[in-house]
Length: 318
Image 1 (cartoon, rainbow, N blue to C red):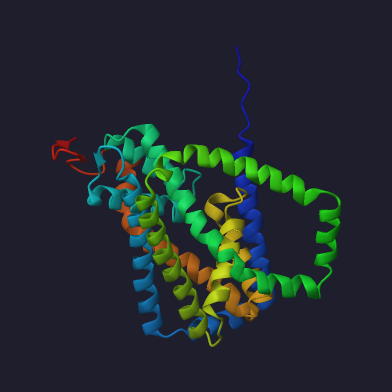
Image 2 (cartoon, rainbow, N blue to C red; image 1 turned 180 degrees about the vertical axis):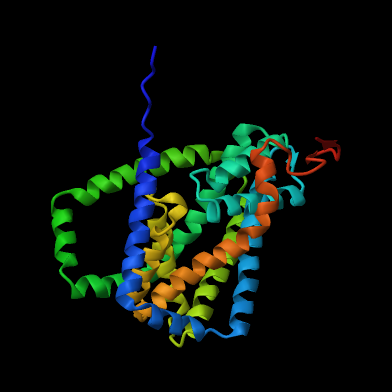
């Protein structure tokens, strides 16, 4: 009996979104001009590139520190070498591999093979995401002045008023509250360990500061200037828009978002914004390359290291 082939609409939408976003990015390149964009890139000096690569390393290590801290619960003690390998493997899967197998899936598979329970591993990844999102959400108010000025100067504020009058925002707010409630129900264990959460949030702030400084160093290297607070606000907007699951690993979507937000709201030249977007994509990929040594082994069923994990009494488990 022939079975009907099940259509993976999620995969189709992601690939379609990716291709559409890349197409828009190419269109923006053509509109701005490749020569003008390349001229902006050539202004960046060697010491700025070195500084950016150093900040990328700090950002990656802070991301690892956050997850490693969240794993230190119950009676489990994960070796820092193991969590570092898994973090870089996840980053490589997210930023380099053109696949829907995300970095969290890679980290989950590796953590389970270390002997950590699947439920605890999955919960730690949810907590990791939530702490990162919390840090970014705290930066959103810095985007309000730029957004307010833009909406006031355009017809967009009239559309927003219309949506509010139609009851859109109350309904949307209700759905958000429901989703947040479900998330925090799964987040309850870490809420009982506020010190661990505070440490994880501290690592998040280090990661975000490194990212914001990367943007500032690159923008100033291309001959323009933008306040660090505005970078924080615009980057947080970029972060949340890039979470929309319509492309593979945010490819294309993130670049289009950066190009538009930093030029329209940030006041940068379009050539600077699009150069920034492309350079950042390349930098994230370079900063994730160490994971190439670990990701194939994890997906192939090997343990991230030998031995795998230490428990609370100092014994080593495979």
